[in-house]
Length: 140
Image (tube, rainbow, N blue to C red; front, side, top):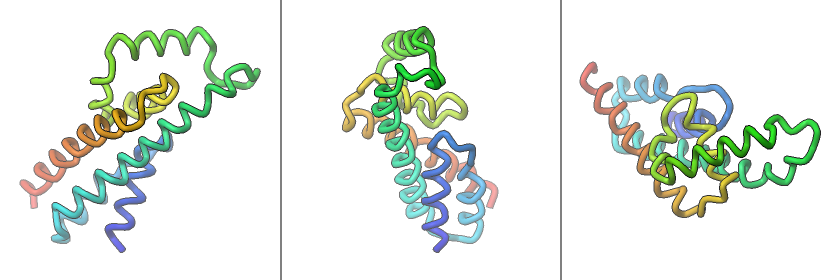
């Protein structure tokens, strides 16, 4: 059951909802759960959470002409320009707090090919959880 909780925590943490999975991951490491399995579960959950953001970004453009749409056309154009400037490589940093979640949403808005998105985001998130596990194991 702890692996399921970690998966859910990592998935929700990658969406636009505020949550962090690192504390649970560290606690499970402290309880001597398999670091490799924890890495796999956390990376998978967090990557799938980013896929939700990508889909929402792709879907939300259908609503941009509504009065209540939270992003102005000017803000959207600015964000798209910024994304084009830094390109697909920026998706390797989808794990970064505050900017990562909107970045994955923007990738959907920009219609980044899903498989390219998935590979880049999974690499970045896998590396990040690898570092978190490595650091946590140094203190156990």
